[in-house]
Amino acid sequence: MKPSDYSLKRNWRGYLLVVPACIAIFLVSIYPMLYGISLAFQNYTLTKANSDDFRTFAGLKNFIEIFKQSEYIQACQNTLFWTLTNVIVQVVLAVLIALALNRKIKGRGFFRTTALIPWAVPSVIAALTFRFLYDANVGIINAVLKKLGILADGISWLGNLETARWAVVIESIWKGTPFVMIFVLAALQSVPHEMYESARVDGAGGVKTFFKITLPMIKETLGIATILTTIGTINNFNAVWLMTQGGPLGSTEIMFTYAYRRAFSAHNFGQAAAISVIMFIIIALCTFVYTKLIGEEED
Amino acid sequence: MKVKRKAMNVVIYVFVALVSLSAIVPLLYVLLTSLKTSSQIYDVNQIVPTSLTLENYINVLYKAKFLTYFRNSVIVAVCTTVVCMILSICAGYGMTRYRVRGSQKLKMGILYTRMFPSVLLALPYYVIMRNLDLGDSLLGLILIYCSFTLPFTIWNMQTFFRQLPWELEEAACIDGASRTTALFRVILPMARPGIIATGLFSFMTCWDEYMYANLFISSTSKKTISLGIQSFIGEYSTDWGSLMAATVIAMVPIIIFFVVAQKNLVGGLSAGAVKG
Image (cartoon, rainbow over all chains, first blue to last red):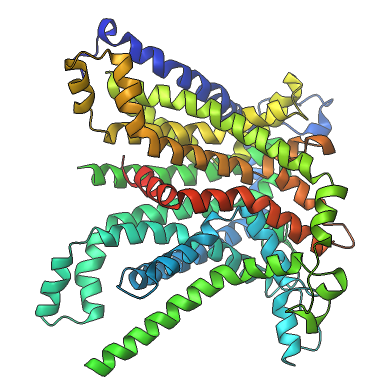
């Protein structure tokens, strides 16, 4: 099949096929990204386009300035909370659901399909759906609570300082868990049945079997799913923006939405780019771990 | 022991039923609300309505510009997907079938471009689109959408092509088929499930995109569906009935994909992500 040498003479067709995609990737992805990174080191405020220092080299000024902003520090803390709660709850829940759906239960196909539905729902629609469910006047949560006489007036779950961040996290868990579940279920199905049999013969209970046999077998997949969820959660603009726009009082603001706000409300592209670069470094580290994990899978 | 097992079974069924319910109920309530009149929506005693109406759907389809939004989304998603699929099928085939120097490095590089925070690209694109005068246009949107679709499709196609049994191509060639014939008769048919899954994913991500569309599209005639839905949310009051009807309509293509190609999609997703 494959010729063993890399010579251009034998493989020119291959290069010809790969090159268009490479040029396209460079034009739509790499060049804008380099441009974006360069903005982080420039004085680039659109509203001050006529000032003398516009587009001049700024060194690390943008980075130093964002760390002086208390809103940015809050956005960092929120990002940490947002990512940790999302990833931990989604992974644990996904493992539990996958374990249940891997058993021979009646209606398994039906349950598997319905459990996947939130994954297929577009994120814009999921966010708007939950915004509706949480609404103080028309939301079903308030309607039920009022009907049961627990509440006299509706609570605005997304407008309330104590509840907003949890309300957004719940939507994100609803939307994200099935994705992790797909991975875990696929991994569980590849665990040989005999391994469970022999564990049962040895008298191991359900919990013990899980930690001694199942977990070691699915640990790589679990790692991959965790990393992908982490990246997806850090990048999850739609959920936050469409439900709260980072409010109330910045309580749901994450780094992504803050960078967006710095760029398109304050028109300070330099600072927005600086925040994006920090996010990019975090995500690149995650991606590096991911490449190691899929590399291991390959062998 | 037997009692314990039965109890365990009950717990599992209750758990699984709860999971399914929490997955479906929000969407069912959206569907139900889209069939209510506006006074029913605000009435606590009409959570389960006593009568249904199609008024909201008529409102969305005939009075609002929703069909335009729908059409724009289809144009953007289809064009982006077709362009990216052609480029990545070529690249995937080239990278697996031939010895191309640096393809492994290239592939890993592409993975990083897949993970970029999109806000990092939104800033330069804002400047680039203004310079190219593509600001408020579907063409500009298609270009931008390629920035996140293309890395994904290249990665997936390369992975699928590598898993194919290439010996079959060799066999076909020994039987006298040319390499081109072998490609169209043997390789592409085998790669079809992967191509379909990747294409559908790419369509779905474009269909769902909101941030770039919100930044770059300003005229009503060019809005995509994710923007169009927002038009029912006013600053002071929201037309919930129409919003919910619009939501249901916007989900139609996704529901069709899910029903037609669920196995394909799910299999394609995990295959593309766990193999390097």
